[in-house]
Length: 87
Image 1: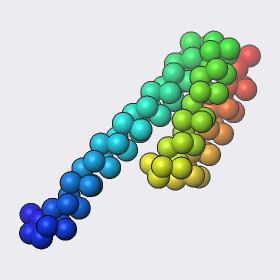
Image 2 (image 1 turned 45 degrees about the vertical axis):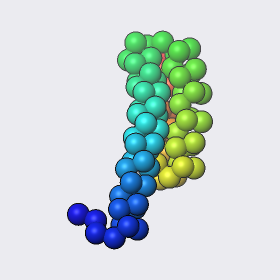
Image 3 (image 1 turned 180 degrees about the vertical axis):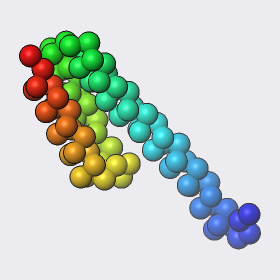
Image 4 (image 1 turned 60 degrees about the vertical axis):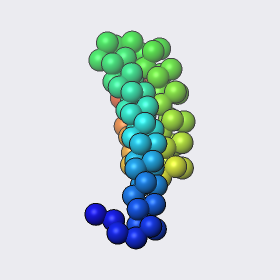
C-alpha cells in the first residue's frame, strides 16, 4: 500500500492512465475484429474499408504509447496482405 502523498497520487494517476489505455486498446481491437469478420465473410470491399479505418486507429494508439510501432506495422501489414489475397 502507498504510504507517502506522492505515492498515493502516483497510484491515482496510474489508474487513470490504465483506464484510458484500456479504452484505446478496446477501440483498436474492435476495428481489427471488423476487418477479420469482413475477411471471413469474403467481402473484399468491406474488408478494404475496415482496413482503412483500422490503420489510423492503430497508429493513433502507437503515438499514445498503447502499442509498439513495429507491432502495429506488423498487424497492419498482415491484414493488408490478407485483404489483397482475397479474390
